[in-house]
Image (cartoon, rainbow, N blue to C red; front, side, top):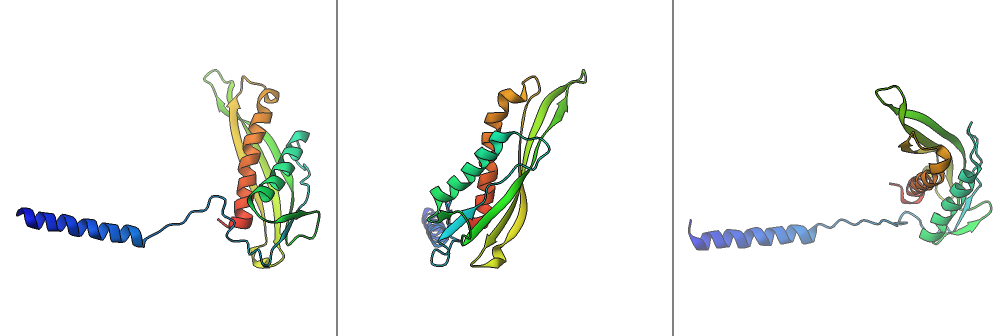
Amino acid sequence: MDWHKAKNKIVLGCTLLSLIITSCSVSYSFTGTSTIDYSKVKTISIAEFPIKADYVYAPLATRFNEDLKDIFIRQTRLSLVKQNGDLDIDGEITGYNQYNQAVTADGYSSETKLTITINVRYVNNSNHDDDFEQQFTAFRTYDSRQLLTDVQDDLIAQMVKEIVDQIYNATVINW
């Protein structure tokens, strides 16, 4: 092949590739609150989520309630009000359970699965098409040789963060 023809093909290919790259853009927003219309929505009310699970671990409710409020305060311009917000979130902690996840050859449990389930009701008073009621769940496994009391605070922190992120994304980012 002639060097000039090859050079022209390379230049043409690079030009086309650069045109494609510059004409296509993808925008990501990891703290994106782009779906909030701040001209209509200025406040949010978040009710305390009580524990309605069969097994109750009181620090779970406190951790969840504080973390949920905190994400909206940190990542939006919304003012937190006690009731009647433009956005309203309430619900309850419906599940805090542990199950044997895996069994060893000698018949003993080797892993335990800890699960948290939270039921959320969301009302957008400026656009009721966005309203929903949904359950959010997270789980972690831990070595069954460990006591739940030794690992639960760390596991709860991880699971609450995951669920709070899910709720935030479902309510104001609409992912």
